[in-house]
Image (cartoon, rainbow, N blue to C red; front, side, top):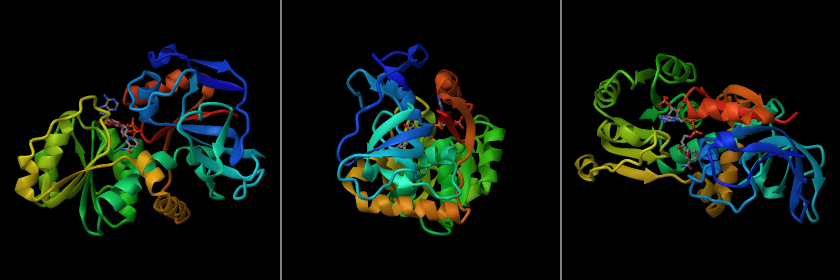
Length: 324
Ligand SMILES: NC(=O)c1ccc[n+]([C@@H]2O[C@H](COP(=O)([O-])OP(=O)(O)OC[C@H]3O[C@@H](n4cnc5c(N)ncnc54)[C@H](OP(=O)(O)O)[C@@H]3O)[C@@H](O)[C@H]2O)c1
């Protein structure tokens, strides 16, 4: 099978799609013929050795995909051959096949395409866990989303809207703000031009209740300064590059919280709530409340151009690789 195989950590452009043996089936696992795989920012970091997880070489990159089950390992009870599923794995999704534990697969909603299925779990799963279990977001609260047109950003906008919040989207261009408004944000702040803190305070009438921050870098501190009394700041990621250092007096002055979010680790610690969240996401999809936005699809062979779209900050929504 064809697979994006990493033999060393190096710039993503230097990796290659190779012919490798298909993985062997094992008990409790299913074989999935992959149709599409979603690219997430951590995939770029992982192939370059900049992510917290560093798999032994050689490894196949990619963490989420959608496809059809073609083989069942011994003892598999919950899945069947021919079923359309989405799946999250630590590694191995940028390939024509993957073998994954049955518990990591969820049936695709009937109206969901393979590309949408491949684009759903990590971004929407992270955003729902962050807004619900970590921030306890309430209807009517004001939610500020940074990097609002990126993968997790757009997911946070749609889910925040579905949860009844009033959303302020912050992004680096008018086009990105418009994309966020089309998905449910009430206001947009172009932080390449406008002052994030003062605009967010102005638009929220004094301070926001929750900040969702996948960007970090120079935007985290002004966003914390835009919180109101009892506000919650969600640490999602550092796509901007730098991990910011925050003066703690900012939390004292507003009785505010800084809350870390690590969706992948949480799914393993609390699988029951993770499964409930997945069911909720499928329900929201069926109700038309969420719809993963595909920025662009590329054949697996063109992974480098697909990675460029994320690295060069051009993506609006998710970038997807297709295998067939
Ligand atoms: N905590 C968790 O459990 C968890 C789960 C999934 C993802 N994440 C993290 O969330 C972050 C976003 O992931 P994603 O998949 O949504 O990525 P993405 O689609 O590429 O979005 C990231 C956004 O960050 C902004 N950005 C600012 N500086 C950037 C730069 N130098 N390069 C690239 N983007 C930059 C861009 O928005 P503007 O151009 O509008 O600034 C971009 O839309 C990543 O750091 C990822 O590791 C965390």
